[in-house]
Image (tube, rainbow, N blue to C red; front, top):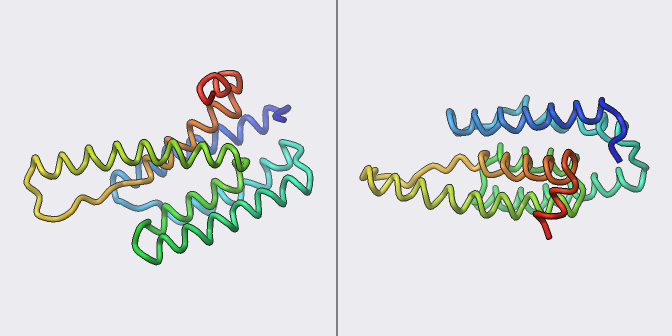
Length: 162
């Protein structure tokens, strides 16, 4: 699937973008629109570098559209932040459906651990308000997991994913 160093370079750029998203979410509880747009706009370059056919590209677009519908609903009820929704939809343009399901699972587990840890920290420090969870960390961990296990080290992904 990945035959060129260009496609690997794009994956490294995506990994760096995920780290930036996690960092800005920790610092400001915000994932910048320019970062999400850059991730989304680079996806067609990745499709081209990976020699994806029109059917595969169609699946990626359908995955992103489906993710947008579901995640926009979660945003509407206040369950997710807008930057988190945009980041996940942008990632859906890059990651195949099975990998996206893995991303969501890693994100859910790491997000749960993060939420419990921050809630405990808040209770210990006796903060009066509920904690603000930088869920971009969990999204980034899920994305980095999929990049590492599914693209860069596929044999490790087979062992780790079962």
